[in-house]
Length: 424
Ligand code: ADP
Ligand code: MG
Ligand code: MG
Ligand code: MG
Image (cartoon, rainbow, N blue to C red):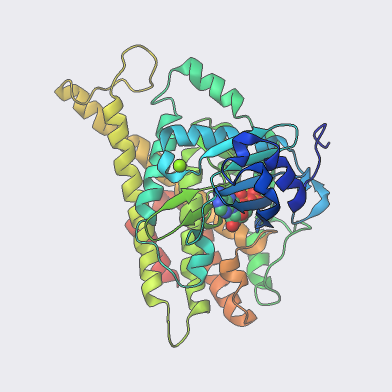
């Protein structure tokens, strides 16, 4: 049902909305100058409407959530509570990692609007930049920090259990989770009505996937984990279209799917998207740019992201130490004694081994989903020649299927990268 009092605004409506609110207008210009403000709708996502306002004082980004999925229209209703989640998560992430999150200025529950810092050009959506052939030297390092900072600080390793439980409840996002459960963990394994794939080239591959018992069992275990494990506040939609970057800066946007879930999902989803582009490179290769360098960079970004995440997360864990007051899940003070140090080391190893296995499984299923269900990635879709596209997609499909069904056998990020290279 539409949120009571909700009204969809167009560019003129957004301008009037901002001009009537001094705390917002100040980012753009004095309200009497509003005739001269430029307002554009810039949304290119599947779900919401996004506007930028530019005026004499600067710029502002405004996002409004309709009661349905933009890409599907009113036939696919979607909870508008997702805006409350997005606002609360942007604020929570900024508390732990302000350098990688746009500043939140405003949340209006009735109108389902948030306003935030506009990230001006040369900031661009990473997926688009990658398709154009760009690389981002600091992306892996920045994302490693973003993930370690947000996941550690919202977990029981950093937080007393009463506050943790309150957070789990506050960030409950059941309806959005159900969308993910369906699209990511279920639809790849059935001929669901919204599914599509490059046809007829991939017909046989998709039929094989639908009959694949090992892949389906692995996915169903991950689906339970996704729904059941309350490990940290995860972004839950961390693909390359949710990241805006330059050569020096990286911002994570669009946390409307966030909830308390398994950390491995965020890690796996971003790695899956880097690998999808890796497999798409051949379809974008030209004589002038064979994309060899970009391909190499993508694999190094995968390796650096995981290594950097692990390093930073464990560093935070050690810094946090043992609180000894039943507030943190950590019982080890690495600095206090030899036993403390040994316990910390072993705890880190066990924790990271499980997180890595989860991440590998999740990355496999996320890759499959982007190749054979409703929402594809432009990395592949923008390869115009269907045979060339299908060849890239098939390699990605077989790789994703393999790591999903054999996650426990992929013991290191180096092995993952070797497998990707062999699969190409
Ligand atoms: P959706 O939920 O519909 O996917 P997004 O939050 O991903 O919406 O935003 C859609 C697009 O709007 C992004 O791909 C990006 O181009 C643009 N955008 C969103 N937020 C900002 C921002 N803070 N600054 C600049 N552009 C933005
Ligand atoms: Mg988006
Ligand atoms: Mg900021
Ligand atoms: Mg979104």
